[in-house]
View 1 (cartoon, rainbow, N blue to C red):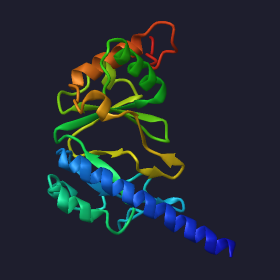
View 2 (tube, rainbow, N blue to C red; view 1 turned 135 degrees about the vertical axis):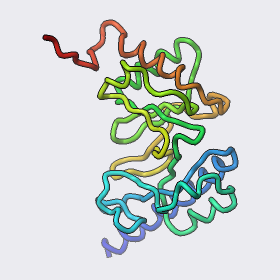
View 3 (cartoon, rainbow, N blue to C red; view 1 turned 60 degrees about the vertical axis):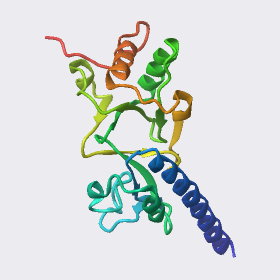
View 4 (tube, helix red, strand yellow; view 1 turned 120 degrees about the vertical axis):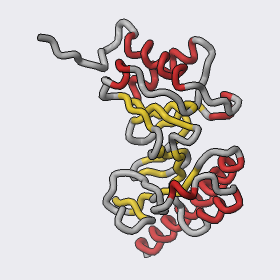
Length: 211
C-alpha cells in the first residue's frame, strides 16, 4: 500500500508540473520566445529522449530541435500533452543568457537594482544564475577569462522556470513581467557583472597567477 501511494503521489506531481509547464510554454511561444521541450528528472536520471538518460541536465527531446524553432504556439502546446518535459529556451536566436554562480549573480543583481534597471534572472537548484539578454556580442576578455562566467548563445539552450530538477525547481529571481518583458542588451548585463567582479570588500572570484 505505501508503494502504491507513492506511485500515485508521483503521478499527481508529474501531472501538475506538466500542466504548469505547458501553460508557461504556450504563453512564451505566443510572445515569440524560441521554447522547446527538454528531458525531465525521474529517479536519479533524465528521461524523455532515447540515449540521454545519463546526462547531468535537461537536453532537447527532439533531435531536430533547431529545425523546430519558431513553431507556432498551437503546435508547441502539443509537445507537452504526454510528459512533464522541462521547458527550454534556445539561445542565440534573439535571446542569449549569461550564466554565473549564485554569489556573483547576487552581486550583479544588486548592481542592476542600484541603478533601477531590473533584468530577467533565472536561478537553478544547482546554484547557477542566468541573466537573459538580447543576442549580441561575445563576453569581454575579463569575463571570458572568469571560470564562473559563461555565455549561452548559438546552438545552446537554458532551462526555464518552472522546470523541475532532481533536487528542486528552476525559478525566476526576477520575472520578465517586472521588466515589462524588455530584454536588456548583453552590454548592460556585462557592465553590471564587471562592476560586481571588481566590487571592493568582497572575496575575489578570479585568481590571477603571478610570476
